[in-house]
Length: 92
Image (cartoon, rainbow, N blue to C red; front, side, top):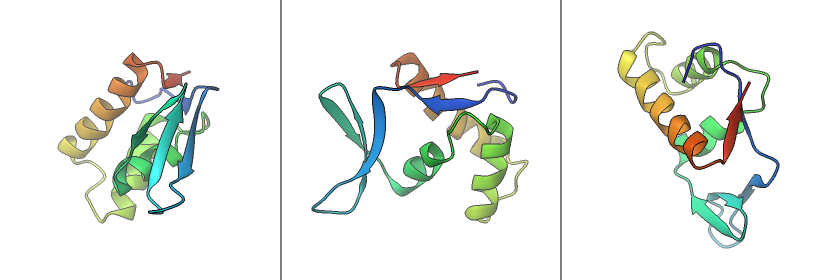
């Protein structure tokens, strides 16, 4: 994902807490994905207003990582690229 891309969920996808477990789910077209806390935090920041670089910096601060850590940016970028390929997020 390009550093200046502004990812956001597509209109048919939404984040919702599971009523039984409280875990965050990504719901879309009669299906869903159970998200781990880091994935849920990442997607919560994908509102179409923040760039990928800003999202990476915010997550690095939240989890106490070095904002310049290449591995963290690569992991987040890979996750978002997989969702982009599945049509669950878009990027401006």
